[in-house]
Amino acid sequence: MPALQRKRIVGTVISTYKDFAKNTSIHGLKYTVQNDSTCYEKILWVIIVCLGLTGSLFMLNLFLIRYNSNPTRTTILDQYAPVWKIPYPAITICPVSRILKNKFYSFVSTLNFGTANKTNVIKELFNYFENPFSVNFNITGVSNVLISNGYDNDFNFLELISQTCIEMLIRCLWNQNEINCNETFVKIITVHGICCSFNYQPKKLLTNDMFGTEYGLTVIIDPMIEYRDHSKLTFLGVKVYIHYPYNYPLTGNIEKVVSPGSNVIFQLSGSRYSCSEEVRALTITQRNCVFSNEIQLDYFPEYSKENCVAECKLKNLLKMCNCILPFYGVLAINLDILPFEIETVRQNKLLCDKCQSQCEDVFYDVLSTSTHIVDDYQVYPEEKKNVIMLNVNFYSPFQVILLKDTATSVTYLLSSFGGIFSLFLGCSFISGLEIIYYVFVRFFINLKNTNKITQKHLVKVKSNNNTLHKQQIYDFNSHRYRNHDEIFTMYGNRYLE
Image (cartoon, rainbow, N blue to C red; front, side):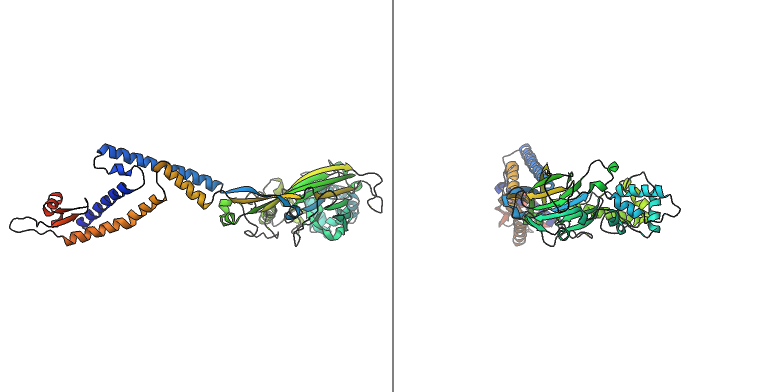
C-alpha cells in the first residue's frame, strides 16, 4: 500500500473518530477530543471510559453465567386442576420373599443331584433365591445341578417355586366395580421375584375422575405367610410400589410395606410437570433434561430416568459378561455365568450416572392409613387368614400442574443488557447503531470524499516561483476550505508526491 494512501486512511480514521466522539450519546468520549482539553485530561477520560466498558462487560458476563447455569424456572400453572388431568399410577405388588417353601421343596424333589451333596445344594439353592447376592453359598454348585436337570435359566422354573399373581390376588375392584384380577394385573419378573402390576405400560394412560377412599383401585391380597421362611425375613407382608405407568417399578419409586391382616389406604396427590415451547427450543445442555421423544430406549417403550438406569445396568452386564441380573425380567440368563455376574454386582460395577431426568414428568405423594380388618369380614367365599385389603385413591378433586418455562424472555434480556450499559456508559440501543453507522458507513463516505477532493484539487507548482495557485482546497481533517498556502504550510510536500 502506498504511503500516501496509508496516510489518507489513518487521517480518515482519526477524523471519523473525532466526529463520532463529539456527537455520540456514549458519555465521556467527547472529552477525549476537545481542543481546549489538555493531554492529561484526555488520557484521564480515556481511562474512565475504559473502566466503564470493563465494568459493563463484567456485569454482562455475570448475568450470562447465571442465565446459562439456570435458564429455566418452574411456576404453578394450575393449582386446582381436576383430578383426571393426572394419570392414575401403576400399582406393583411384590412378595417380601421370592419363594414359597412348599413349592420349593416340591421342586427340589424332582431334581437329580448326581454326585453333589444333596443337603448342601438344597440349602445353597434356597439361599440363592432368597438372596442371590449373598456371599455365603457356592453358586457354581447350584448352577451345575440346575443345568444338568435342564433348567438353563431362572425363568424356566421361577413360577414353580414362587407365588403367582393368581395365588396372590383374591379380589379386585375399580371404582367399586369388581374387575378380573388376571386381566387387569400383569406379571413382572423383578429382583423380588414375581410381582403383579396394575396399569403398567398400558396402551393408553388411565385416568380417574373419582376421588376418595371408596374409589380407585381396591385389591385383596393373600401374602401366604404360612409358606414363607420366617427365619430369613425381618418382616412379613408385601411390598407395594407406586410409580408412573411407563416407569420400571423398582428404580427410584415410592415403596411401601404392608403387613398381613391390615386394611391399608394409600391416598395420593399428583403433580404434573409440563414445559413451554421456549424450553423445548433450548438445547439439552441448557435445560438439563430430555423429552421422552429425544431418546429411544431398547427395552422400554418410553424414556424416563428410571427406565434409563434399569436399561443401563442391563447393558453394562451384557458388555462385561453377556449376561443379566437374575429376575430382571427382560432377557433370560445363562446359569453357567452366574458366578461372574454376581461378583460384578457385589463389587458395584453397574454404575449408571449419565441418565438424565425427563423434562415432563408426573410425581405422586402418598399418605397412608392402616387399620386391622374386622374378624367377621368375609373377603372371599373360602376363609382366609392374614389377608391384606389395599385401596389406592386420589384424596382430593384438585391436583397441581406446574410449568417449566425459560427464566428470562428476549425482552428481559434486552432490557437487562440496556440497563447494564446505561449504568456504566450512559448509552442505549441507539448508541450501538451509531457505532455501526460510523464504522461501516461514515468512515467509507469520508474516505471516498477525501480521495475525490485530492484528485480534483491537485497542487500545481509554478516553475518560476515555486508558489501554489490561490485555489481554495477543502481540508477534510479540519472540515473547512483552505487556500494553497495554508495547505502547503500544514502538509508540506504531501500533495507533491
